[in-house]
Length: 120
Image: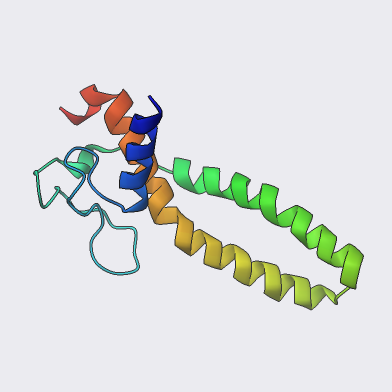
């Protein structure tokens, strides 16, 4: 069981197809546009239904992590309000851009694994 979890997580972090684990999920570039089909195995990627789930998960995860850090910075250094806005806005934006593709890939991989009927 743990090796299956690790394999799914590795596939998601690489943003690869959940079936063949080699084809790219996303079109090239800095966007979240999925390929219509897997370039390696032909899986119809348009049948996924990740919707807004990955973004909502990311909002909760980042909120849980960044708010205590912002409060700790305020308690220790008392920076001006604009410093908080610039600093935490940049950190949140950067972490979102880095984490959204792999998180969406993980949700797609979980859907492929646990709801195979959706892909037929």
